[in-house]
Length: 196
Ligand code: SF4
Ligand code: SF4
Figure 1 (cartoon, rainbow, N blue to C red):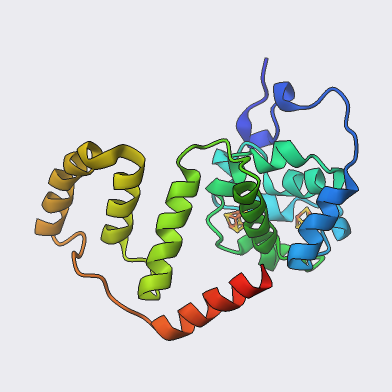
Figure 2: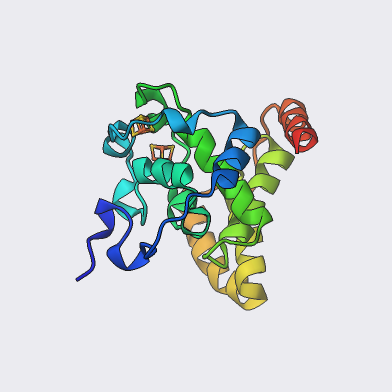
């Protein structure tokens, strides 16, 4: 019988043999400078994570998996896309590991290496970042429209349009995007791109 998701990696997803891959650990460290090896598995990150219940590998196990070099398990996990970047784990870690930053790095590597298990995750990621880059903040209506068009085509967009209109009439969403510190946000994006 499979373990419940909340407990971490399912038994069936565990490899028969664990072959440490220090290259993966180094790759993560080189990209973000975080000392993941300092993790002593206290589980404070997982216990504070508001979305751990819906993760397939809970945060402290992600840290352990990075140390062990379980590249595919981590990069193909749902966890890295479920993570809401709320930084609760980061503030709770007694070893000062910025776990949210590590999760972000894992998303980047997963995208670059084409490992993501969720077909639409890169599309969502791209729609989200385009919105933030162009407006300085997430413009929900524009982002959802862009995402729906790319993931479900024009038919999907038209289907969603009815619901969008109803929500607009009730004042739940705004059609026109709001802007916030666009030039500063663009500068941050350029800096991140230059770092590679
Ligand atoms: S940043 Fe991600 S992993 Fe950390 S607590 Fe928030 S949702 Fe959980
Ligand atoms: S809170 Fe920090 S030290 Fe504790 S398990 Fe999480 S990453 Fe490791």
